[in-house]
Amino acid sequence: MLVFMNQDAYDKFRLSKEDYELQKELEKEQKNTTETKKNGKKKGDNKEKSEEKKEEKVKDIVVELNNIEDRIVRLTPNSSDLGSAIITKDGETLYYLSAFEGGYDLWKMNLRKKDTKLLHKMDAGWANMEMDKDGKNLFLLGSNTMQKMGTNSESLKPISYQAHVKMDLAAERDYMFNHVYKQEQKRFYNLNMHGIDWDTMTKAYRKFLPHINNNYDFAELLSEYLGELNVSHTGGRYRPRLKGDATATLGLLYDWNHNGKGLLISEVVEKGPFDHARSKVKAGDIIEKIDGQEITPESDYSILLNGKARKKTLVTLYNPQTKERWEEVVVPISNGALNDLLYARWVKQRAADVDKWSNGRLGYVHIESMGDDSFRSVYSDILGKYNNREGIVIDTRFNGGGRLHEDIEILFSGKKYFTQVVRGREACDMPSRRWNKPSIMVQCEANYSNAHGTPWVYSHQKIGKLVGMPVPGTMTSVSWETLQDPTLVFGIPVIGYRLPDGSYLENSQLEPDIKVANSPETVVKGEDTQLKAAVDELLKEIDGK
Image 1 (cartoon, rainbow, N blue to C red):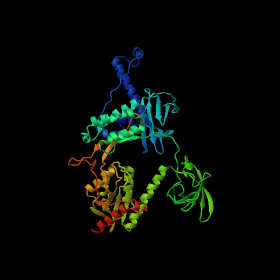
Image 2: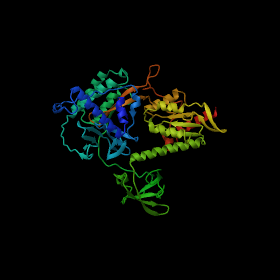
Image 3: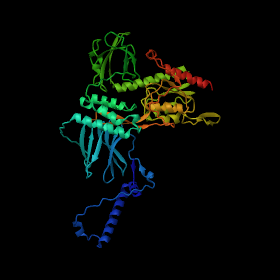
Image 4: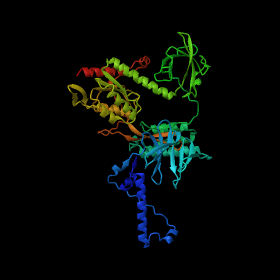
């Protein structure tokens, strides 16, 4: 988005290329005429002045707040994850970093013609750029590389450098400890630091610093130190930058009771590498080899998948029923991708259970996280495939937070006020863009942050009942800050949520209306006691009306 500070700049931006060139010529002539009159000379009779070197005075920027909201313009044509952006000195060209799929790439947009093109495919994990004083060169930093691009040639050239730094790591840790102390004191949401004498507590923990010689222990010290505040969303984290083999997966589940050679397949995960029309693989088949390497009871098969993510891999299979042996070429996926598939599998199983237990009367949605993607998914399901259901089960279990409590409250608090009727046929109830029928919410001990706040709001606003286990009081908003050593991160709870009586949601445990635990014995059998209790309670509520 671009905001124009005054109407003149905005008007010039909207001119076509031809009209803008005419405007510039007109302004040039007007300027020459003004200077000629000022100097008392005829046009062109200023040789003496032209020989004098004048420093051009920097023009003041005129800011016109009136109607500034009407001078906001979207520049980029597509929605994406944007990095840094720079406009050239003449205001004609926009360079920006954008990630559509994968990493950040460098794009160029002609602001006058509205033409956009991909300049360089960088696929950078992160990137930043700066322009030199003259506007002739762009310098790009990202993914452990520095590059230079001339705005005329637009070709990227690597910048090599060598630097040797001798670090006093003990002194750096002392500095970072002081920084954490000051930041928490300055930004912690509660002015009295939860009743902790912060200076005294800091002194008590500082004495351990001379005995720490690595970042792992330093992060543990920060966690103990910050834990004295008795608050969520804080502590120290150490994230070492280790290089090693990444083990891929074939998107299969195995029978670990199998004692023979190979891997006995118990399930082909939906949408995994083997879940396609050309594959013959099914539960009961055995993987004998991966890229020609035999799998034995004594060997660790995972080694055979190191570095194989997104690479063609030959798998040798055997069907013990038909005695058939064959080979298939697949593209293994990362463990992260498998986790996404297993999450989708889990949700699908829960939805099928609710459908079965309610005889098709109830729908089921799981809020994975308190963010935009989850909200869109929930919105689509409840007003789409579940629109005709009598009620909805809202599952918030294992949600790590975000900020959706207001959106969920509004979405599920609809009250029917009339029905659309077309020639005697009922079309839909109103409001049609909010759920206006009964619902119930499931929670558990693993809910965190806004997954504490959202069930609290749902219950407080009397939208429906809560089923499951108590949720720890973790409703604060956090600022995670990377320290001078980028492998270290710490959290500052900067926002608390205060109730009318002066108390805060933080450290206030949320009790369910119906307390139900999922015991390990039932979970391993694939049974969901909490979900079954929610279905039974919601059906009882609907039938009782």
